[in-house]
Amino acid sequence: MDPLESHSQKKVLVVEDERIIAINICATLKQYGYDTEYLSDGIQVLEKIEKAPFDLILMDIMLGGEIDGIEVARIIKKKKDIPVIYLTAYSDESTLDRAKTTEPAGYLIKPFNSRDLYVSVEMAIYKSQIQRQLKEVQQRLYEAQKWETIGLVAAGISHEVNNPLTSIMNFSDLISREASKSENIQLMGYAKKIFDESERIAKIIKNLVNYSEATTNQITIVNVPMLLNDTRSFLHQYFLKEGIQCEIESETVPVIHCQPQKLKQVILNLLQDARSRLLSETDLEVRKIKVNIRSPETSGDKNIVVSIQDSGRGQTNPRMGSAETLDITKSILMELGGKMTRIQEDTKGCWEISLPINKPLEKEI
Image (cartoon, rainbow, N blue to C red; front, side, top):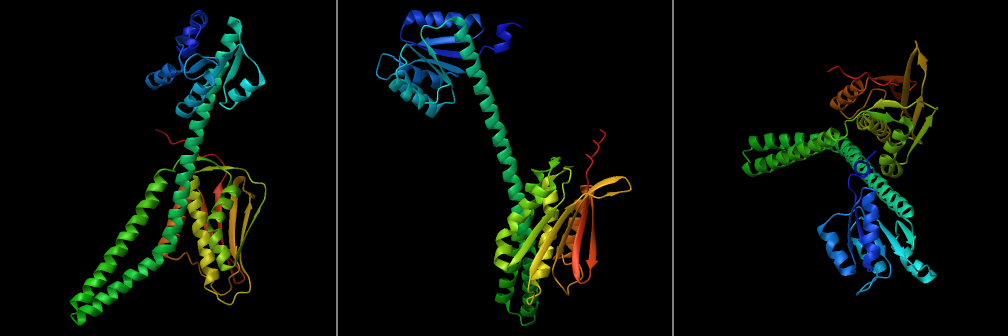
């Protein structure tokens, strides 16, 4: 392979105050396909990197001028993500200790041959590229996790706020009707203001949920026990304050392919329903939610089954906070290829959801 093609003209800046050595290094690197420049003064180097991009800097430690190579490298590290290899004829401990603080990509002790130069340059640039790619992947992962968190928070806000918000709007409507009977214009204005602001809050919450879901709709591999633990962690502060124990028991189950944010929404809604049942009974000795994850095989089909049971007693009917929330939860599960059923065990209520393990077929275009 042509070196020019393999390196795509990577740019190397040689910083060396002995002109003959600098020219020789540049000539050697050009033979291997690199684009090179050389400078001899540290201040010039700092000015140069602001104007032109470089993939690597070969830095002589003992530069003439106002600042030495180590100081130049220290300043570069603060400003630019450019790897530096030190060139030095000195290997005393104090110099190396100073140099190490700048975290260089390597050292070349003079005199060195062309092969050592090539290998050092090649490895330093390759390592820098890998580290840069890793940072980009980590940043993308952070962004994805950030939007998942926003979606989860938005879902929690939606569930917690929508019910009392609906009550506020209903009461404002009642106030408005009573005020109209007595022709109290001022009170009617206050009631309308309450209703309008409540509607505004509802729209903000809805937009936040919709926006966060739109950014996290990619199908990916999901570890269901881990996802359940993450969702429980979101509700931990509420459970702790309200004296609710939430235990998760899990068999070793396969991963599934789905949209993780949508599955989190389902789990969050069901946990919130169990929490509502428990809080509706003030004389319970133990407030407990038990989550069980298993992978039974029925009729040759493979599924993961998640059951969410609470220790409530009298409230035997499903209580999702509203019929709308129940419908939304069922609809999301249908999108994921799953289903949801209500199981009655004595006086205890239990939601059970079933999710397919097999990877969904690609849609035909």
